[in-house]
Image (cartoon, rainbow, N blue to C red; front, side, top):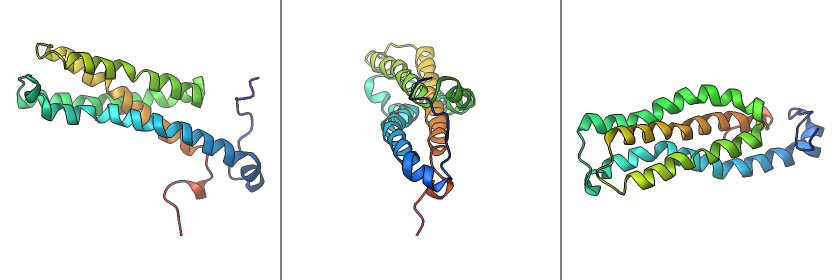
Length: 159
């Protein structure tokens, strides 16, 4: 058994939290913050890109632009279901690394595709769908990281 596999996790147990839990939870949070920021950025990327496509030489109808903006949200919401089941299979850290690495696919794809205004609309639709990887990653990771903290420490600090 790896030293990185949690065999006991009791964040509600005060002595466990003070001795072990707090350190592990905060380390996981620090690792997750940049990954979550990147995932959210990829997920929302098309809402920024779409408003500038005409300046880059792309000519699409409003309906086509709508679909480029909507598809990441639709695919991200769907992928969240599957991503949530993968955390216990792969482990939180490993799945964070894998799912964050997968974000290179839409990021690099968009970078290359938007350099050429003759890039086909179906190609851009596929890239928009792939940006949903960020949504699945973001949503499932948020749920995963909250698991590490006691209920009283989740969410906004209370006075």
